[in-house]
Length: 505
Ligand code: NOJ
Image (cartoon, rainbow, N blue to C red; front, top):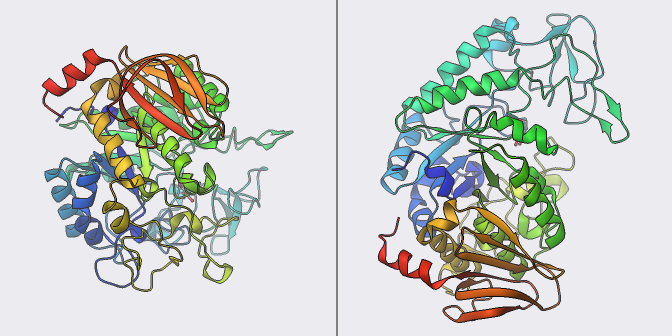
């Protein structure tokens, strides 16, 4: 398998508690994921990344780890993980884990036994704010009579990345999982690891506090470079996908280092934060393309366990628009990362206040509700409510006109046309409300995100896929008419001939 499978591949994010429950206790688990590998193979994804699977008191649902080298008993065992990795591997699906290196749980044994692994101060030394709640990022530990740093919840003390022993521990943690055959990591808050050693105040501007000193320190790049060397030394090389959360494009691009010596992939959150609107998205993508160092490869997503689901955020439930969004994510230059349920145009769930479990405000639970497998939902008293299963796998799989089939066909087209995986991106002229681009010389994509029909000029070739499923297999010679909320992929004849004679990847 190609060592850079992740460039052309499609990633699929699984929130393990909510994906599939093998033992009927209402909590999804690793054997449940393994049971659904047939589905993932049928859908055509190349890699899955799992939100944290480690033992955790779940103050922040797994992002507060008490043991980096084990599996949370509710989710399964190490043997279940090994089985998942090998069964997925047999289907050509790689498994990435979520690495949480910025902080542990305050119940991690290190917090008591290795105070030098954390960051302490006799008083509150600066204006750093906790991401959750917005209060001081420092809390008094009564046992020690000192304050510890927590950029997130008080139950998530920050690790002290100035301590070489912390670095050594994490090298061991990375190797532990990579040696087991894990394909890489999604790295939680990859921009946050190192804090300013002098504990200088974060600057406060008109838009509020900027985390210049509590996070985003230049020294973090050195850690990412080391991990890149470690990942690249494996055979096959492993992949590092970073949550480098900054909307400053230059800063974000910096997490790719010189292009090939830090993260392999970093989520382009600027697109996720944009409106699903042609002019805005086109501008964001042009900026990403212009800013990335050569060799760097973007990663696109519209949904995740923090942001919620694209079918709600971008599309207000409109399925035609959700298909346009999928078309965008899967045909730009870069790796798409789908969130479980995106392929169904699944919307955020309804979680009444008494069922809210998240520590953030507003709570993120609506974007974490269980995967609806059947019209009766397929769950037994799930940990988060599943109120609406109108959009479900069973019904959509039985309907060739469904969004699920559209998503599958889109992934298949991407696989069939290598230029859609690795070809260059070039913007094309398009009327207001629409956005058009080419991949390489032979593929054109046009999408009308507006509510009026439009015509895009100068498009020639065979229509291989449309969000409306109309006109597929037809030809367009010059003027492409797009209905409101419709997108198409058009391929020049030469490329079709090539792709049908070449073996399918
Ligand atoms: C980012 C994760 O995606 C989010 O869910 C978590 O709460 C914070 N990092 C803290 O780990």
